[in-house]
Amino acid sequence: MEFDNNRPIYLQIADNICGRILAGEFKAGSRIPSVREWGASIGVNPNTVARSYENLTERKVIFNQRGIGFFVSENAVELIKDTERRKFIEEELPALRERAALLGIDLTKHI
Image 1 (cartoon, rainbow, N blue to C red):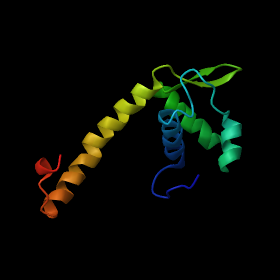
Image 2 (image 1 turned 45 degrees about the horizontal axis):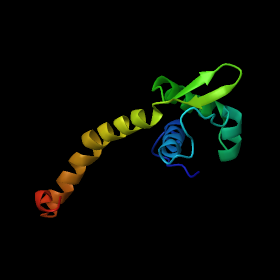
Image 3 (image 1 turned 120 degrees about the vertical axis):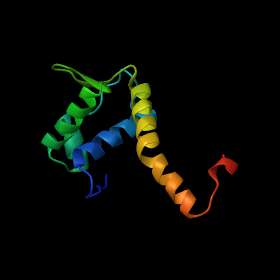
């Protein structure tokens, strides 16, 4: 995994896990790698991974079963899609509209 220096690593790890869930690599109800396993596989301090897991747990994308590990929530895909849709509409779409306007592109004709 390559990291962007402009964004906290724990958020990039959380995004990567969400991407894997959306791609079907981690399915609802399945166990994801432990904090230590994940940290070792990507060369990151386990505390950073733990922070990612904490973020995903707060968002209810994953849940912890004490002594067993972390698992993908049954409604993880919908939760992730809802979050990504909101981020797209609030953050990316306005920039896209502005860029299109600067380039003289009428988006209503190309939708």
